[in-house]
Amino acid sequence: MGAKTKKIRYAGRFRTGAGARVRKDFNAIEAEQRKKQISPFSEKGKAKRIASGIWKCTKTGKIFAGPAYSLGTKK
Image (tube, rainbow, N blue to C red; front, side, top):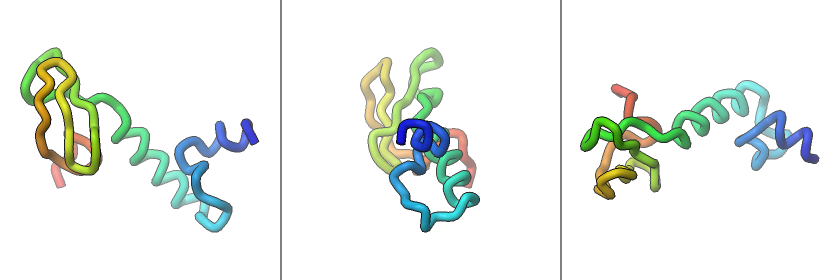
């Protein structure tokens, strides 16, 4: 199970019913949202995603609303 989970990364929670394309797209979104983003409050600060659309600056401690997955998206 270890090798299979390592290969499919975040999509390991799904069973075989999800297709390869769906798992690939899901892994790309999950990897982007779990990264620490650049905070709008501090140049050197980072923002971490707490929940969908809720972010927290790690340097200042401010909690703010923003895009759901990544602060760099312009949709």
